[in-house]
Image 1 (spheres, one colour):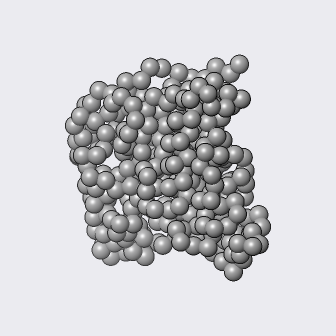
Image 2 (tube, helix red, strand yellow):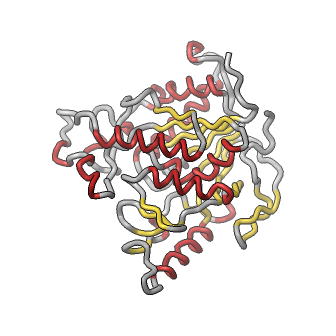
Image 3 (cartoon, helix red, strand yellow):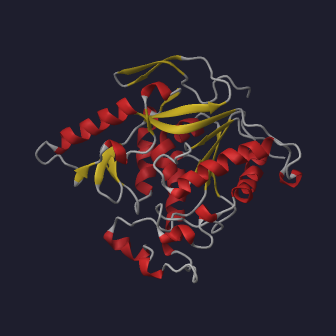
Length: 319
């Protein structure tokens, strides 16, 4: 029987690259401190846009969308799986899995696109069926802490919304004594967090990006993202937990660079396929939505103090 470390963290994300953008510094910090960090990725991101010109051939062909003729295996999906492996190596995370196994659920594309309706699209998955795959992981790893998206998925992508629903449902089912004992013994997750970015941090980061863009020769990208482009922005008072990952800034940046089809990193900023710069955050923020809040303290993020916030996702849980 494998003996796991005392602290066990589970993260559920929709596509490769989401984990590094949202939680890369947190994952690296806990992995380096000896916690068991498990990442479950729900799809391979087969419908993602490709940034580098020399990899453009990997992108899915939009003309191939036909609900009566499901799309063939994706070259981009296989490539993004290798990017995910490289990113996890950069973060020091060895336990990363695909929900239900490779190819079980396919990227659904942006909301309202024909891809949403294709057989096998994650958006079409039965929530309880998909959650059962995650229950098996929960009962094996027995995490005290789960991190996922808010009900809007951060920015409305169908796979992010579905990942939220599956993660929350799996947390319920994993604790039910009468549910699928073939998947392992029941386990109740002590604390559940949703990713977020405080409005003040987002505004400050974008102001820095605009200032850099206004400096002759200083613009790292074609433009600067707007506040509405950033996922999971919430009012500052909704933030319960602040994780200082500054010591792991290089690891997070390396993990994001590993997702080269999706992300361009330049200095303290990054851009997606829209080439709009946004801040690369190494202090990461969370909303505790289930479980007992641990002791609060004044957590610093650069020159900003966050009084009364947790500084540890495991604060207040038995390990």
